[in-house]
Image (tube, rainbow, N blue to C red):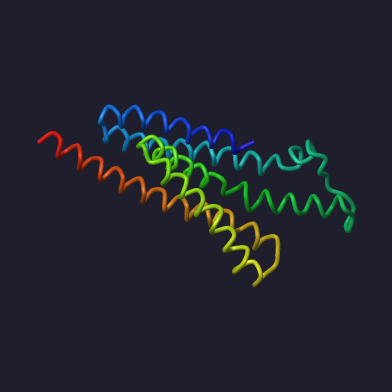
Length: 177
């Protein structure tokens, strides 16, 4: 419910930034990054809160309903609820990461975007599962790795974008002289 709207920001920003990169307009890219981050974060936050508040009816769409204590239904409902708490409430952070991957693609840096996603989401999660999860083998410990990797990937993404923008702006300054 939340991933498609937030992934669309990545695609939209790849197009927006690509147009402004080609037009040699780093200031529009910077302004777009700011507004895109605010918009993606806001949409993500609203979706996250709505999904959390509507978790019971939404889970019932998948046949997951609460049941008597100790039943398979109760266990499935508990696992799904814990997952929604740890993965859905902070999901807006993933939207911020999606904006940075779109900006990188639009600036002609798809490899950096790919590496950000590969290392930030795959490698860090594997490391989390191998190093941290064995220390406390609970659902909470497993699921909290997701927002942590989103935060790390978002930070790395913004660093990569600002470096690329700085380089692009410097190149534009040299070309105008």
